[in-house]
Length: 125
Image 1 (tube, rainbow, N blue to C red):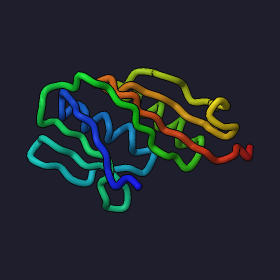
Image 2: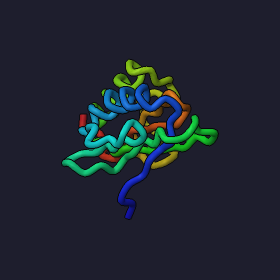
Image 3: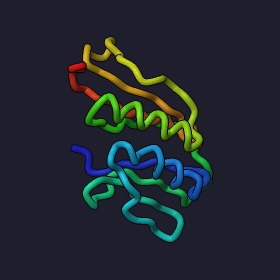
Image 4: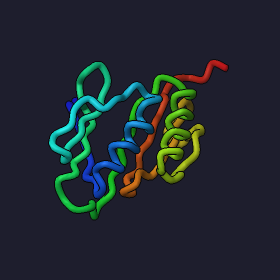
């Protein structure tokens, strides 16, 4: 079980603002920061996703997926992330090659990390 994870970012302030907007539809909020070099996001008061702005811009890009409760949340994440400066990397939709109920959206953050919101629940109309 993973307790927390994070990504290295090049422009700390820009990335904090991006993730505040992009993760809000998923119930995530900024919970704590450390002297402009680290920011923890999460739900229920527990940060489990961190931004590390203590070094220069990342040279490697990662993929991280956030679980959404519904397809509506996936779409809201996608729209908020694009409005906050992210770039499209896969519009909201089903991905049946993963499984029949996989519904996700992919956005590149300002540093090029592939950020996803995914819902695994069956669509009930």
